[in-house]
Length: 78
Image (cartoon, rainbow, N blue to C red; front, side, top):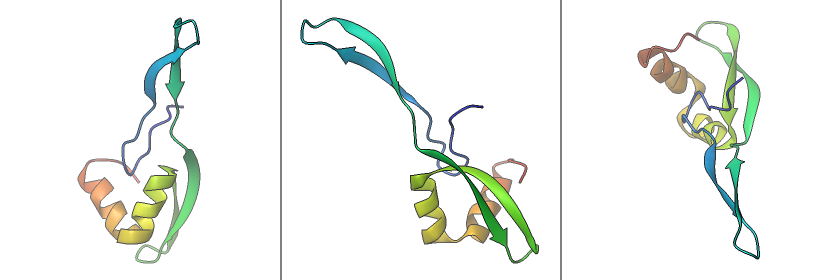
């Protein structure tokens, strides 16, 4: 499973660990992805989304109906 938020599109960031001796090794910063179930009152059913915590804040701000409508407009199957 990829660590990509369905709402915001956040994905892992890549970079280097830099030690005291300045050696560099690859590392990755994963977004805080959660499986969350939301209730859609217009359809009378629940939907499960893979969202980051920032995506949850977006849903709280805009509402689940608006977010699901935007996702369907982008072509995602919900």
